[in-house]
Each structure stands twice: as structure tokens, then as C-alpha cells.
Image (cartoon, rainbow, N blue to C red; front, top):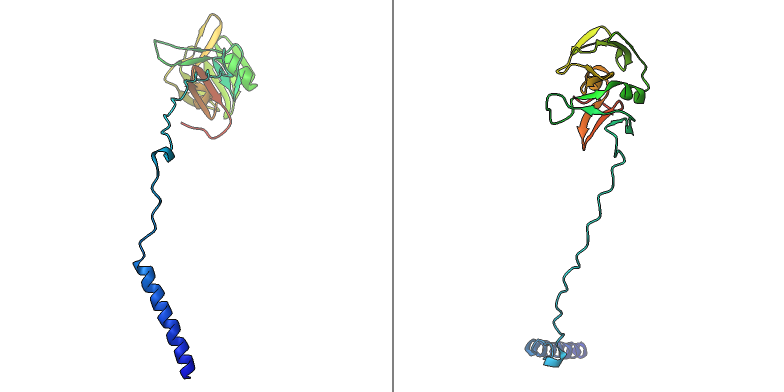
Length: 180
């Protein structure tokens, strides 16, 4: 047992000497650098000027009225009484784009809408849908044989989901939820 105690004492003494020696050693530091070894300072280069990409042409260029994402040929919007945005659209080109037939006789218009039969007299702002009268803020009118209806006609009377003016075009959408 004495033999093991001596060996154990020697091991502990060696560990003590090594730990004291490590504690007194200074932390290693990086060797000093000479001025020649320093990296040269790099000046930043300015970003080259790039011309912006031109705006892509609108797929609806040249068309005033877009029905369910498709331009309505010969359809156009009109502004009444100096309004900033269009208040009226041509009736027949929009109905053609929607595939809706219409009967016009003596300024009396009859057609089928999404909510039933629509009747109205050109020049008035009362529109009848399936027996119910809807009065719009603007009246329909006719100029040079072309009938115009208020923009809101297609949403409030015809039953389209949405009708709006954006980017120089009138959009009439019959698909999707109706928004008021």
C-alpha cells in the first residue's frame, strides 16, 4: 500500500508543478507585423450607373374597357360633366364581350343580366332588374347612335362582381365575389 501511496504522491506533485507553471506563463500574443506585411487599403469603386428598364407596355394598350381580363374592341369610356374619372361606358361593346344579347326599340332596352331580365329607357337613371327598380346616380344617355350606361350599371344592375377604373382602363369583372 505504501508503494501505491508514493506513486500517487509523485503524480499529484507533478500535476501541481505543471499547473503552477501554466498559471505563470503569459498569454501567447500574435507576432508583431512589419509595415511591409500590412495589407494595402482598397478604395471602394463607385457603382456604375445603370439605365432603368423601360416600363413594359400594358397588354391593354389601346383599349378603354377590359371585360373579364379581355379587351372589349370598340368599347370606350366617357366622362360626363367634367368628372375626373369616367362615369359611363358604351353599352353594346361590353354586352358583346359578355356574350349578352340586347333588344333596343324606341330607346327602350331589354337584356338578360346575371340577376334576371333588365329593362330601362335611355335617358333615365331608373333600371329594372327582375321586377325591382334600381336608381343610379347617373342616367344612361345616347350620343350619335351610341348608348352609354353609368359605370356602376354593370355592378349594381347587371350583377358583375366588380367594376372599376384603373390605369386609364375600365375593368368589368363578372367572376369572383361581388364588391361594393
